[in-house]
Image 1 (cartoon, rainbow, N blue to C red):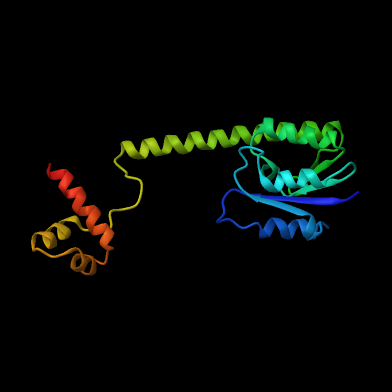
Image 2 (tube, one colour):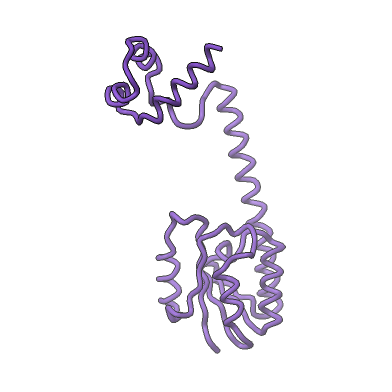
Length: 187
């Protein structure tokens, strides 16, 4: 039996280091750890696809957490079924579960459904909170960083783009964009 590892984070800014370290601590050789920096929304991921080509009957895949393999119950059930047909089991280290045996597969399936439902509830609550905040006048996004009144004043004084950009510490491109915006407002 060979042991493989799979690690995933959602964005390129996140680090795989903790997951990889945990997999190595559990006995997975570094050369047998496959990873992705991609959303778990679907199973079309390069590292996961490569892992599928390497595993064979009797192998085991270690994953730190259930949601690292996938986010969607249906995708997870399909993946686990695909691995089972290949004779490969999956062990979720932090969750203390494995797909070995009928009970293990059932528990993993139930937990996938619960996790998916919880994610949906979190999104719902977040969106409700945003709507409530907006109704109270709270604005989202980056605050305006350019003093438009000062910009107009400098423009009216006849300063050129280079002078304005130096004076206001903004790029010349920003000066031209603001000039264009002001011209649109006037017309």
